[in-house]
Image (cartoon, rainbow, N blue to C red; front, top):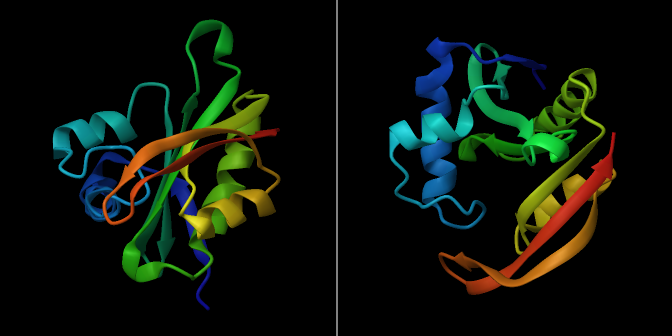
Length: 163
């Protein structure tokens, strides 16, 4: 399989990131963002001041993206939060794992002490298993905290790991 190159996003990457974001969020099954999130709002959510936003390329084609940001402001800013998206036609190619590994190193280098995911959809079993493989553990459950597009109300997990 062709290697994955992960690098910091640049402004010219936005159209590819937007295509991924709109496809992933539009499905209504893995992110709490509204499925009809506008492009301007998506850009604000994914490429904010102080965020580490990166893209994954395979043969020059952007196939995934992640962001790392403080989970909380001020006295909670030493814990990172991250989000990952893989282009739907590229699932299963190791991109999510590569993004996670890269983001953990970037978060550590930026001085974060831990990483927390606030809203992992319980039915997203591929993601839950991947995050567990990288040392994250479920530290809490929000019962019926997510309105899944097909399954109705399902639980959200809060996942955490130290860096």
